Image (tube, rainbow, N blue to C red; front, side):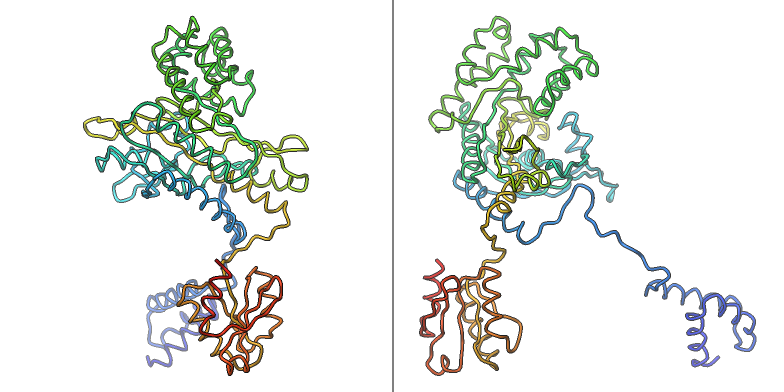
Length: 523
């Protein structure tokens, strides 16, 4: 069979489908091909057609993000970068260095570290013989990193995404993929000095972000365990009861008690005794009073925690942060790895009425008409035993740290931007290189390159002959503060007309002095 005949047959097969196949089979003798050869050729053509795509089998896509995730617009990212910069600046001010770890870990690394929350870990399919899981937080990978590299002293920060197979409530700021901003101090130091610095960092960040009123609740897992013991909670139920107490910021006491009694098997009397303790709040005075409590004073654990709590408040006084810190016995934090001091920052935000809808959509919990209660925006504590879990010889590295809840903070910052008339810039361009006449594209590109080479953030419109008005409007829309205007007369005189977009003031600047003038005006 000749080449032309075969090509004709293939074209027919692609166009006519089944009819062509039947026709080819009926006339196979005239082409000199067997039935199996024709079937093989037709299969190849149909496969090629499927690869190229066609109207009949065209796949329709649902254009949405995966459940529990979201996209961020340039405006949202500009706000987010501002928040990150404030947080990173604070971390660096306190002498931290940064690390990074893989987004997934061996499953066994994460197993058994998160208490009842372990069910929220994302497991991956077998990858080349390794069972893997997406990281649930940044603390456990940090502990693994310390043990693996035999590091005993470090002050580090880590900002990265973590993943939780949670039932997302995005209107309440709960996502399946989100950033954490962690600061941790690892090493053997005198009691409560690093812990106090972590609380100072939370205080500084929330003050600098100007998010409204906040308070930082502190407690100690040793005090909680002592409290459970004197109230009659069996040892094996400490962790599960701790997880239930941790829900007091979201549930009423009666609901928490109901879970303890009906789901966790505690007697009502034991639950009521716990209820008396978890209603207590105060400061240094409460720690001193509890040390004299006839029941708690019998617990060595509780006494050790209360003694450290007194020491902590003395350091917080020196750091000038006690106006925002409260000793709260209801604070539990359900993660299994905490061993000592624990803390959580609670933000109460009052927004203008215009921002109320945005608040509910972007992660805040609606309160009364005048304000919005946001909830926890930072948390952390001491975890002295976690690194030892990974060390082959069980060597412990004491650690304390804090995690900033960036998603909720970002939501509040976004709400504030929506409520105010202030325009959010999404670029950092300092100057637009423009022209007043036609045929000056080459000169604009040449000047733009000079500015880039000098480290100046510059733009040029991608048109050969843009109208001057269009160029000025672009600056006003994007917030570019300066325009460097070239014209035929300016080129002859060796000057550039520099225009202030806000005031519309224009001045001729010698070409050789333009870079210095722009740097002076934008510094």
